Image 1 (cartoon, rainbow, N blue to C red):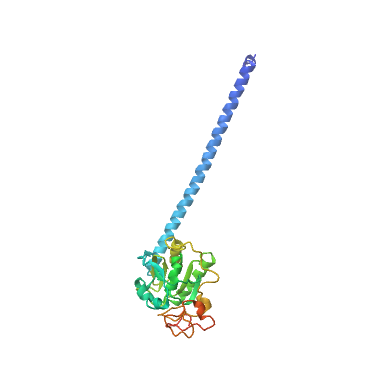
Image 2: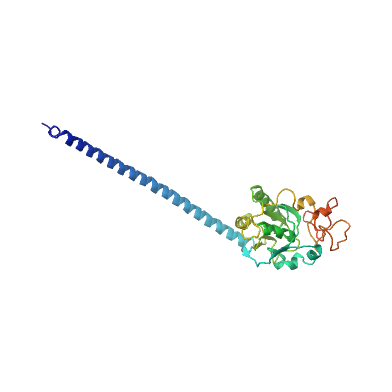
Length: 283
């Protein structure tokens, strides 16, 4: 008689259950080891990916830092708060040209026009006192002056149009009326901060825009981008948008330039764009 035959039915069932349990434990251990192997592999892949991203971003930062030096740029620096508020008359506006109104003649806050500029890239000079209102709404403005390299100016404009097309609409690009501070020919400004550069590099501009587009530090950052109708559009005007005393824009035809003239651009509808004290960049 075999050992199995000598065992009772209940003992045989118990033995088979134990065998099955042992097989299940072995299978479970094998499955756990397999899962652990997969998880370790995934963790290694993720770690490698993170390491690559960290390395890539560090490399990008180093590349931008090198360009900042090459392009003769300052760091993106915070500027003193010069307050806010709207000019109420042409007399008040005329008494406060940008050069005397803003630090170094480059506005990052302070008094400004009640109107705003439409988002866009412009080939004419635009009054800072208009654009500072845009900055109050979370905009970034990119200025260039008369000494800027023409090819680099075109590079700035092409880059900025791409940014606007991809949905970053709080951007204005234009020529500034005065020379920029120091040796700079380009400036990126937002409410409370600025960066000055002798030359233009898209990587530097994009770093500034990444940081400040929709600038949460701006007092009215939640205002929607100025697109569509109802905003000052230098492209439609076809000439410089320079208010007194640096230009005659906004003075009604035949007014003669007195302090009671309208600050509403609609006052000049149907008339040619008034001549400015400076020659526009497009000429």
